Structure formats: C-alpha cells, structure tokens
Length: 266
Ligand code: ADP
Ligand code: MG
Image 1 (spheres, rainbow, N blue to C red):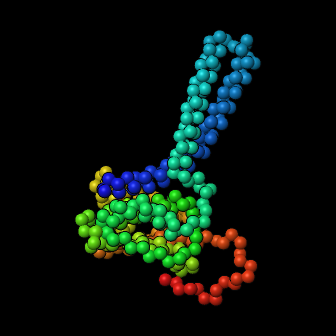
Image 2 (image 1 turned 120 degrees about the vertical axis):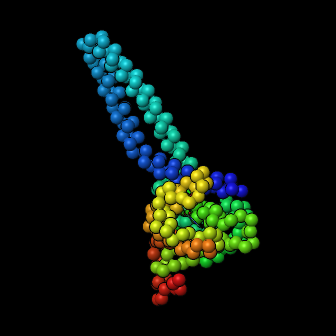
Image 3 (image 1 turned 30 degrees about the vertical axis):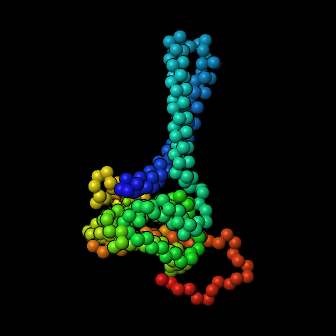
C-alpha cells in the first residue's frame, strides 16, 4: 500500500516536472534546429559553388562538418520526439485549459487514491455545488493527488476507523471555488510552515519524500491565479485549502441580472 502511494505521488510529480521540462526545452530546441538547418544549407552552398576553388583539404573539412551537422540534426530530431512524448504523457499543452468541474476532477483523483486512503482513514466527501474553473484537468488532478497523498501519508497506518480525510468543495468569497483536504494526521510543526512549499523541503525518509509535491502544487495553483493555504495543529491534523477563481461565463446572460446580495460567503 505504501508502494502504491509512492507510485501515485511519483506519477503526479513526474507528470508536472515532465511538462515543465518539455515547455522549457521547446524554445531553445526550435532555435537549435533552425540554426542547424541554416548552417547545413550554407555549407551545401559553399560546397556546390566553390568546390573547384577549394583546396582539397578544406573541401574534406567542409564535408566532415556537413556530416557532423547531419548527425546533430538527427540528434535534435530525437530530442524533439522525446519532448513531444513528454508533453503527451503529461497532457499539458498549456493551451488546453477548459472549463473544469472540480468535483469531477476530485472524484477521478479519489478513484486513483481511494484504496490507499481507506487503509488509513474514513473518507468523507462534502461536495457543495461550485461553478467551473478554467484549468487543465490533468494538472488540477495532480494538485489534488499531491494533497491527498500527503494527507494519507500524515496518518499512521493501522487505525483507519480512528482517522478521517475530508474532501470538501464550496463557494468562497468573491464567488471563488474552494477545495479543502483535511486530515487527522500528525500535523505540521509551526517551524516547518514557512518552508512547506519550498522545493525539496521534506520531513520524510529519503526515498519516501521528494519534497516536490507542495512546491509543484503551489506553482500550478499560482498559474491558475489561485492560492493555496495551510492550517495545522501538531498532533491533530492539517487542512490544505486551494482557492481558484471561477471561470468567467463565455457570454453574459442576456436577461438574468446578477443576484442583489452575495450568497453565503464562508
Ligand atoms: P513530500 O511529501 O515529498 O515530503 P511535499 O512537498 O508534498 O513533499 O510536502 C512537504 C512536507 O510538508 C512533508 O514532508 C511534510 O512534512 C509536510 N506535509 C505536507 N502535507 C502534510 C500533511 N497533510 N500533514 C502533515 N505534514 C504535511
Ligand atoms: Mg508529498
């Protein structure tokens, strides 16, 4: 069961990292391939126009450079294939943000992690109706998966009837969408709170924790103009709260005026 939790976490982290890496590599790669092609054309032109005028040793060097460039191009082509596969694997071409129902994303994420959670705690779902958010479904799933894996890992095994993981959705201030993951696990020491979202901050054994989960959550949520907060009491448990702006309606409803009072800010 620990192994499956680890796998789930690794999938979530790797997917996001892969997406980040693919994105970062794309631009320099395009630059690289364009310049390789240019250099090769120049050499071709040099060879075909000036072959007779060239010293044979110089011609040999140019031919060597040509085949070196051809190999470099093949290498760049392989890198391009790898980057394309990484993007497919992590399914985050950043353009594919859509209107996403967070409850649906939570349900599928819980499906991934449900066995592991049930070994540690009762799962309580408290899903109020919420408006859609503009996001990439699989990225958002990775955020929730990271939080759920952390919640499960914070709960000592062996007493699932004495522990609870609660997942809740509700509409918060300014109509924003609030998702909370609450556990009754070990909690977080106050001196750790300021470093919690730092990359590589972990209190877990090497090999169990990478310390990347929350930093990835933080940057993903920030990229959606959202926020992530934590409240914790050592020995009692923790709550991680993700707040996301509701997606703007595509077209303003013609007749329906906005409600006069905001409904139930919590
Ligand atoms: P990792 O899980 O690999 O250690 P994370 O970035 O996901 O890395 O979390 C960083 C640290 O934050 C954890 O090592 C742990 O100390 C603390 N933490 C995160 N979530 C919880 C939680 N629900 N309960 C207690 N501690 C937590
Ligand atoms: Mg983690």
